Image 1 (cartoon, helix red, strand yellow):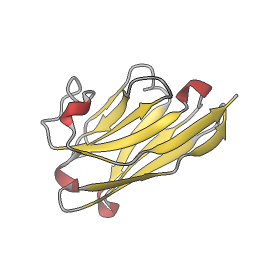
Image 2 (cartoon, rainbow, N blue to C red):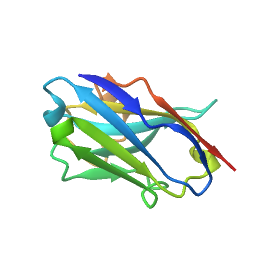
Image 3 (cartoon, one colour):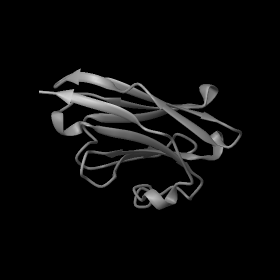
Length: 126
């Protein structure tokens, strides 16, 4: 699976962005998809994930009220809708794919994912 993230950019605080992650390959439908982010000088952190079926989702507690993940099988694409953005959301956002058994408690670990995209930069100005 190859992953291509896009949709990042510069946005003012309070604004919204939708990131996309397009997947190539035949395993998208069987892959759980996750989003992670890494801010300058910080470790990579879990944002959210959606199961291969799209029926289950997991979010970082601090983000679940503002961020929403969805997937569109016909386009082999997963989305991250980000609302009410804050300067502390500034980071490089990465999408990832993995075929582990989806559990909310497992989806937050980067080592569950086998494939990673190149990242897209989101900058939120105050």
